[in-house]
Image 1 (cartoon, rainbow, N blue to C red):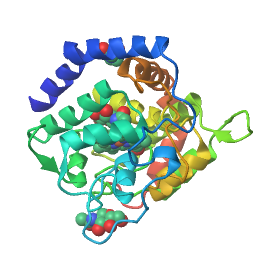
Image 2: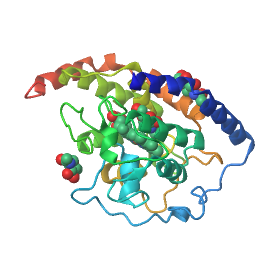
Image 3: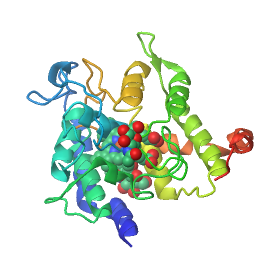
Image 4: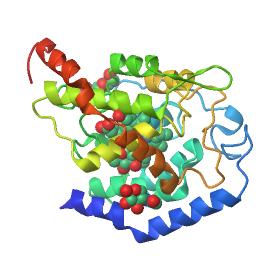
Length: 288
Ligand code: HEM
Ligand SMILES: *[C@@H]1O[C@H](CO)[C@@H](O)[C@H](O)[C@H]1NC(C)=O
Ligand SMILES: *[C@@H]1O[C@H](CO)[C@@H](O)[C@H](O)[C@H]1NC(C)=O
Ligand SMILES: CC(=O)N[C@H]1CO[C@H](CO)[C@@H](O)[C@@H]1O
């Protein structure tokens, strides 16, 4: 029941949705933030100065989300990844990545409900977010499925390298850029192969949408830039001088984000990967 009520909250939370629509409209009429001033003054990362990066120590908590792990690695939330409050997460993802306040309120509320915790009073450890089929799901871009790798903080380097190498776009300066089509293509492959090699594979419609939402941040917040994503995905480190590529004054709203998400999801064609999936199945030593 919990999960379904959360999902229905997602689709029917009229209050957050109308707030989001309002912010989307304000974004249209107000000027974008100036380059170099996207991260607000007084917050970590202002002017591209991110707090020191330190990889996690033994015993620190990390999760399947590269963006949240990076915040812990820079001490924007507790470096231990433990005892993080949902309220704090809301504020920190907003200033770090310039997601809109509606989204930044919605997601930690969703996570708190998933963990059966109080949004306003409780805290969580990053690894708790990896509850399988809560938010974490099969067929991801950068992690093996839970049945194959129970520790979801473990990056699957070949997946990350394949994604980065598959970028087909270029920006004006000639840098490599991942496009919406690139993300759809790789997502299709991940899902087709995972379905073939993992007998416990499951991916509901809602998790598909979440999956393409998570993947779409590569295109929006990170602007598809391979140089930055190399650092974020492989090292969970925010590059020096980095700021969100979303410059809207009220951040990335759900309404705006939806467009990217739907373009990615509708571009996914698992069928194109039937052969790759069969081959992966033949090659997987111990069928799981
Ligand atoms: C409260 C905020 C957030 C929560 C609770 C959260 C949680 C998660 C979880 C559980 C996953 C794993 C999903 C899977 O199984 O594939 C994930 C993946 C991901 N998240 Fe987050 N996340 C949050 C915010 C963000 C933000 C702000 C960004 C970007 C700036 C982001 C980018 C990503 C990316 C790129 C992935 C990888 C997708 C994949 O491997 O397919 N997340 N997140
Ligand atoms: C999970 O993997 C991470 C990264 O490799 C490691 O540091 C951590 O100790 C592992 N956690 C468990 C519970 O095995
Ligand atoms: C985003 O898309 C979902 C699914 O189509 C929809 O139910 C939701 O209302 C949309 N949110 C906004 C703010 O447009
Ligand atoms: C940044 C982003 O889109 N995060 C989403 C990842 O997926 C979970 C659900 O699976 C959403 O709650 C997050 O909003």
